[in-house]
Image (cartoon, rainbow, N blue to C red; front, side, top):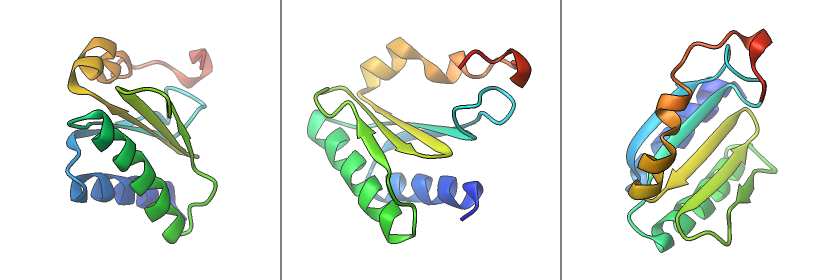
Length: 115
């Protein structure tokens, strides 16, 4: 499955399940860890947990297997590793604090990427 299809599916799943402020960041020329990062906010700890679980279940249905959830113990952040797409789910306050969108918006040549 193409990475753009996976990214678009993730955005739709998050939108359908009431995630807020869904943003996609192209990492293709910035990092080797993934092609895209998707950042979204949830409304509560339970909402973040549900979003992460729903995302893994729905991705499996479309053939994206072996996705992992990190931060299961955290109440304000979850990460879903969907291979070429990394998904960060935050409480709005934590999202503002970490400000991943600003951090990854800078142009960094891939050969200089440290991650």
